[in-house]
Amino acid sequence: MSRSLQTDKRDKGLLNRIADGSIEAFNLFYEIYYLHLYNYILRLVKDPFISEEILQETFISVWLGAKKFKNRSLVKTWVFRIAHNKSVSWLRKKRFLLTSFEDNSEKTYRAEEEKGTEYNAENKIFEDAIYRAVNKLSPKHRAVIELSFKYGFSYKEIAHIMNCPVGTVKSRMSYAIKYLKQDLNNRN
Image (cartoon, rainbow, N blue to C red):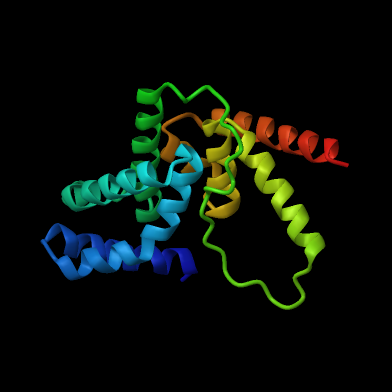
């Protein structure tokens, strides 16, 4: 059995226990997903306090919606879709959806594993350039990049999370990659 299927089996078991009212299962589910979801939400809304609010709303929706999970997708896809929809809803309310955000990377919290000793300054400079370029993308384009490259979702799963056709995901990905290439080439 593949790792993602094992993970989904574990997550479905937790979701079933959450549906039955298990606080212990909910706490474990929270521990598994909170950091990934928080970082994803933060990259979309660019505000740590709002991100925390949206994260809490996402987990409230998980608690309330666990009984309604229909098994049509991976649990991971389902929970990211909840977080995505809540983030987009907040962005729409604030009319930021189609505007580009200023680069406030100092405020952005990135949870990364410790780098090995072979990690050098040149890699850090390149990583920071990519990070700044991704931050310049619109939330829709940034979301497809994040969901694909950081969280490993397929285009079909991203389409489900973002509630749009797979073709739209491909188009956004194509635009985002072209933009990133152009931005990185302009830095040289």
